[in-house]
Structure formats: C-alpha cells, structure tokens
View 1 (cartoon, rainbow, N blue to C red):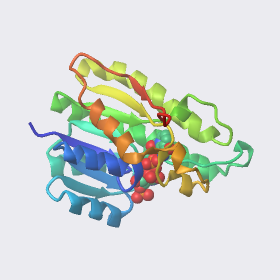
View 2 (view 1 turned 90 degrees about the vertical axis):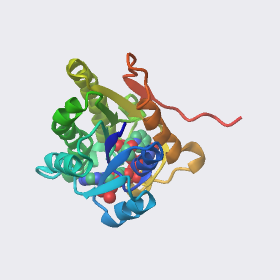
View 3 (view 1 turned 45 degrees about the vertical axis):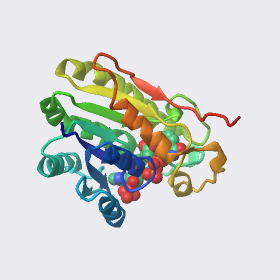
View 4 (view 1 turned 180 degrees about the horizontal axis):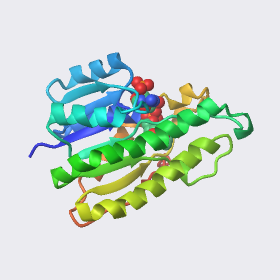
Length: 231
Ligand SMILES: NC(=O)c1ccc[n+]([C@@H]2O[C@H](COP(=O)([O-])OP(=O)(O)OC[C@H]3O[C@@H](n4cnc5c(N)ncnc54)[C@H](OP(=O)(O)O)[C@@H]3O)[C@@H](O)[C@H]2O)c1
C-alpha cells in the first residue's frame, strides 16, 4: 500500500536524511524547505518518489499551502515529520527580539500550525502519524540555549497533549528528541563541535523510519536519544 509523507526542513541535516531513508523504504515524500536548489538535488536522487515544496514554513498561510501541495502532489498524507528547526546561542540577556521570534516562530508556532493543518488529511488516511522533532535540550537546562531549550520543551508538551486529543481520531503523535547530531545547525549558530561527539544524521533519520513501524497497539510517546560511546 502506498505511503505518503511530508518532511519539513528537508534541505539539510536530519530532514534531508529522513527524506532519503523514507524514500528507500518506498514512501512518497513531499520535501519542504526554503533552499530550492537543495530540494531539486534531492528530488533527482529519487525522481519518482520525491516532490518538493519551497517555502518558509513560518509564513502566513504556509501550513495550508504545504498541505494543499501534499494533497495535490501525493493525493493525501499518512505521515507528517515536523523537523524544521533553528537555534541561537548566547546569553538570554543579550538575545535580540528578532532571534527570539525566529526560534519560537519556527520551532513552536509553525510546527503547531502544520499539525493543525494536517489533521484532516491524517484522519482521512486512517493510519495517520505525526512525528515532531524536539531535542534532548527540551529536558536539559543548557546555558546559552534558553530560547532553544524552552522551545523544545514546548514541542514535547504540545505533542503529548495532541497525542491524547488525536488518538480517538486514529492519529498517532510521537516525538523524536535527537541528541547532538552532525548537521549544519552548529555552524549556523557559530559554534564548533567535534563530530566525534555527534551522531551521524543518517542514523538519526533511521529512527524516524523505526517510529513509522510500530505495532498497531503500541506508542512510544517520545524517543530520547543518546550517543553510544565507542568501545
Ligand atoms: N543537530 C542536532 O544536534 C540536533 C539536536 C537535537 C535536535 N535537533 C533538531 O533537529 C531538527 C533538524 O535540525 P538539523 O540539525 O538537521 O539542522 P539543519 O541542518 O540546520 O536543518 C534545518 C532545516 O530546517 C530548514 N528551515 C530552517 N528555517 C526554515 C523555515 N523558516 N522554513 C522552512 N524550513 C526552514 C532548513 O532549510 P532551509 O534553510 O533551506 O529552509 C533545513 O532544512 C531541528 O528541529 C533541530 O532543532 C538537532
């Protein structure tokens, strides 16, 4: 049976690898992000399975536009992976309001709006699922990451509540909380992390696939990850 997914933040990191992993498993995917050329390159890897939608998901009407694109190009959806996310590193006392808005508008508001817009299509699927990407930072009070940590804590609580509300409607909601993963996010925030401490992005993306393969009567709630120490 055909399976169809939306993945946001598909132009790099965990999102791009999630698109690849889902495509390898036979899913048709609508890959969403702002960088068109990145999405085009991804589509060329799996021509028949990947469609693209270029947009800023924080924009007015963006959630509805993403769902309209998915309904038109995939004929509906069975999975929404809300992965697009951003951060800002520094003392909260010095955080510009524009960066505070950027972090919360993407990590929380856009994610919530996409969930809302996706409910009718996921309900129509009969086996609909939402995977919201939070972070271990949603559980850890990390200095210099006040907005990021609190935005991810909001994603976790929002997802827990939504899971209860949507369960009677046949839609699962689960959270993937990555630990440090080797992506562009650190460079974008102006920090350097030794890759030896990070999980490869394709490994994190595999977990998304695992989360789509749960037995009918079992949910995970949240998958909190940690890097396995080398022997
Ligand atoms: N890497 C880690 O250590 C780590 C740990 C825990 C959680 N996470 C979470 O994992 C998720 C993926 O992050 P990543 O590490 O893979 O980072 P990344 O490589 O920087 O990817 C972020 C993605 O989000 C997209 N994006 C950013 N702003 C957007 C907007 N306004 N509209 C649409 N798309 C937007 C970017 O694409 P465009 O710029 O092309 O739009 C990009 O595809 C995030 O939610 C992050 O918080 C990451």
